[in-house]
Length: 98
Length: 371
Image (cartoon, rainbow over all chains, first blue to last red; front, side):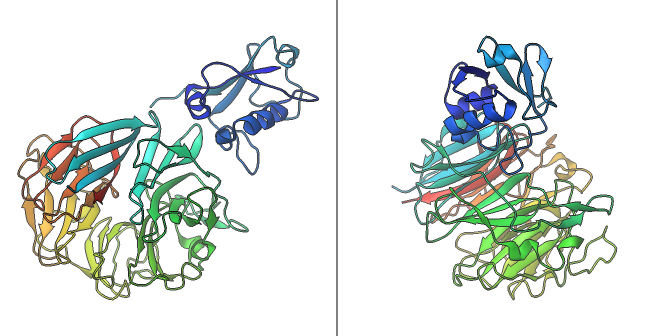
């Protein structure tokens, strides 16, 4: 079970309170997790990545295990603790004013 | 007893303000979509309980929300806005060509007859249409693919299609305004478009009388006079009596003819309202005095409306979609400011009072007159 922490605005949209838990088959990658996230919560389509190109939105970041994975390849394996469910993948709205 | 519902989009959420026909006491609901920019909220004339809201922010992009109960509850619907075919390029601020890229929805215009049909004006400038209540959107690409498209360029707020006016007497006719390109008219339901900017003159573009390139800020039409359009341009207040084929300046006697918003009295097609702003470099009222100007002669002769509006130390702006009218017997006029006030007049502008004073910056104001 993969754990994902969403930013507040996306928790509101998805109508969830805490972490999201997702089943991901095969290699646990950014793409696989986001595919599972969007399948479970279609309202999030387009809010984390472009619906057509699948590129990460510029002000969205991916953190896990104290690493910034935002620029990692979408098909690269996420850290083992994320794949094992020991650590969550954090989806972050980049810090900015406003 | 009839009443009104004022739909307010702000920098940090949407608000729904309701009152009975007297329009003296108000109930405020919101913020809906707290923390998000709500560029526009619009109601269907065919079903007043059907509302659409454009919700966006820089982090998480664009959503469209729909309500079927007058704004009490909302559901997110479709948010995929994909340009039809090859997106092409337009001018960027530095004169280079830049690919069209979707950023956000500026304006939602529901059909007058079908609650499930709604148009969306977006940035980068294009027109989209949904016929299933906002679930699916498809581009009316004839506008963006007009031969002048590569000459369009962004205004300070981006290259946005911000105004959509539907002709109530001709199903196939509509107008769209783009900053900074100008006004376009279709007579075949969006298949083909004609730039209708003759008579406009703009400083700041190489040819001030060019076919496109004008920074039109907003348009208004009275439903009984669909050939007549009123325009607040970057500078200049303009009028057309031939569906945009030609325009003439009607801003004589105004202390400044810069501004964003314009609207028409619900029952008097020659009575129009604007909220003049000092200049393009100082987006606040002249001399710190917030004044709506009214013309009862279709332009040229203007009177300031000040009763109830702050007449000192006021440095707010009134944005292009932030003025609206109701259609009660005594026409109500409403406008919102970037200072978070929504002002209302229940006597055609003679007297004003704030409905709310401390909302986030107001981006849009629409009004529904309820049975």
